Amino acid sequence: MASRAMIERPEGVPVHKDPEILAAAQRMAGEDLCSIADLSSAEVRAILKLGHDIKRNPRAYRHALDAKQMVLMFEKASLRTRLAFETGINTMGGNAIFVDQTKSPLGERETIADVARNLERWVDVIVLRTYAHETVTEMAANSRVPVINALSDFEHPCQALADFMALEEHFGSVTGLNFTYVGDGNNVCHSLMLAGAQLGANVTVATPRGYSPDIEIVTIAREMAQANNCEIRLLQDAQAAAEGADAIYTDVCVSMGMEHESTKRAPIFRPFQVNEALMAKAKPGAVFMHCLPARRGEEVTDAVIDSPQSIVFDQAENRLHAQKALLLLLLGGLANVKGFNS
Ligand code: CP
Ligand code: NVA
Image (cartoon, rainbow, N blue to C red; front, side, top):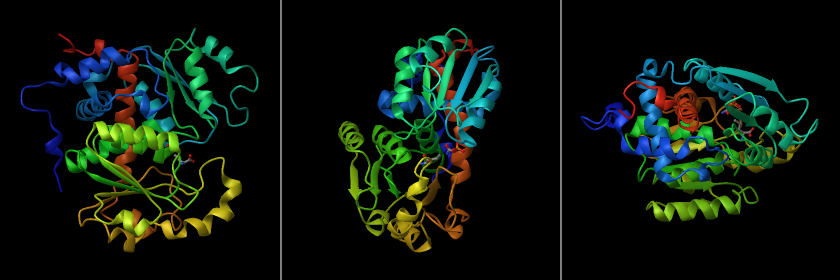
């Protein structure tokens, strides 16, 4: 197993002089994050690099977003995403306002464009958790302040950033890593495929027939993979997908909004459960990953999620650091950090 020391910056290159972070800070200021596909390979690397630095030196960023206002409008439940964004901006001097949209979906009371035109007058960033992905893209198209996708039915980009940060911590680098996702070809799977491809990891996805990832995502991920010397494989056999894996990742087989399909899906996904037999097919040092919340005994057994191979709470912890990095880059906050660009 690689040690954390491997992700330390090369001798003599402070993060604030890091050309990749400087370039990303310039390009990303004022932009949205609806999809991992919005980010170049260099930008994904820069977010993770900054995330590692924030994790090591949180005090250096204490006032980076002084007085910045963030609104979170969530149509679905959340623990990790909401708390990581709220604590993230609070610990950088800003403020979070949470709006529960679980009983009144966005676009119902007034158009999404009109909501955007109001919000941009008061806040510096809009964070959305939605059913329709188009709610996020429409808000982004109509808002002059950055919009962040905090999970839609199509993608979960903030999750994927934290997950690859956890893999970098564990393995030192994810270039050439064999990353396997087993289960539903859903929002989390989509963002992981794109992030893995941008970072040069080989991504294998095993789903039941009929539950494979969206073809548009597969096409984009394969283009990215080609540019980054890695590959994307789609299988329908969990055992084959687990062979030689460095990491095995799963998610619930019934995402929020799909609860009516629970009974139908349960037997279809049973052969895709991550259990000790499946983990035994992976490399000896392989890790187990899950975005959480987990349905213990369904997509993963207690024996696996509670094993020393499991890094699920490192992933959860890194939601904080990766989202802080994202906020800093989109809100131009690095300019307020001592030593940056000077
Ligand atoms: N993984 C994740 O997004 O968790 P929450 O649904 O609790 O935010
Ligand atoms: N795929 C899951 C992820 C939850 C964080 C869902 O959309 O419900």
